[in-house]
Length: 461
Image 1 (tube, one colour):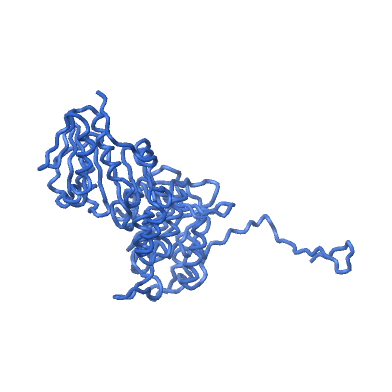
Image 2 (cartoon, one colour; image 1 turned 60 degrees about the vertical axis):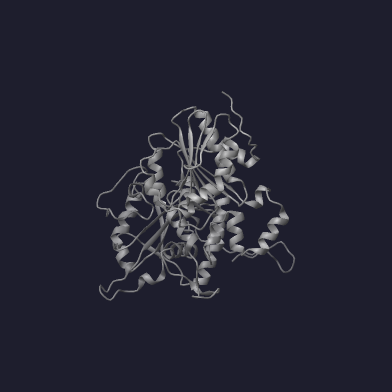
């Protein structure tokens, strides 16, 4: 039976409906119409399925919030289908096929255990605990192979929405898709209205609410705007390892905290390909030598023996992190202070690494400001693998200035926290990498080709 929903999607909403996959992330500016699109996507799917036992949920951080933003739309659009019933006390919509769409709040998510779902919308998941997805909703979809939509406005990088966005960007299976619709590109809001909003709001607030910027919520971030640009330009994606190019590494060697390693390749064109990232703490140099050796094994070959089970490189999957990748190494870059001899052993980490087969090249002893500036100049030509570099990119987004307590001004220098290790290692890459000299090229002979007297003779030096 043909059912008509009184909904005419805008062009970008239509694109979302037509191109979305099983799991989808929709980042959009305020007043884009995401709730209307999400509700109608559920209604259409319910009617197309034709199943009496089809179940869906529209979930917001709070039940009252779900009701305020979505219930009227449910009644408006589903109510146009003859035979649809609404249960106000349960905030449930029952379509004539028997399919049900229910509004939920996640403030008491444990009470939702035991349900099953064919479709799900998570509205503003940045305000939901991660466990709501991983422990509650994701298992609900498993036996029905249900769909899920994450939709909202960015609120920094330490939340479920950013996690889903990154997972969608790294996906190569075709299960995930993602869309970003900032106000500057949609044309849905008048230019004068956007200009007025920008004047009334803090710049970071405007970029977050209307330009879908993850960087805006990270106050004083050094690199987040540049990484946002990389994301928009498609430079955070699957970046295949090029076997014909050496893989260089850049290290931040921690003494009492984490050690971080970037794995990168430099193309003849000057583009930098960051193909992997590894971070761990509480380990000696021998551990990292093992990591390098395992990544040098043939691509796809797993090697988990004598790797501590608690270390996963901050990337979530230990098996993936220690799967052979076929790396052939070039330079290993480290900070200049690794030549300092330790009092306990009388040996420097430079010497200890050499004994393990790692010959370090030293990054110059530049100031932090100069190093940060070098990274900023390099980032526009950097590509990051969205899967293997997830943790490193997240840290770079969060690397920020110190802020004086109780004041609205920046302090001196960067904040030293969990994000510093990845940022420092990248700084050493930017300042310490020099293309290896080709010995076959030989020494160049300087020449002069001029004659002060205007003749045709030339002098050579």
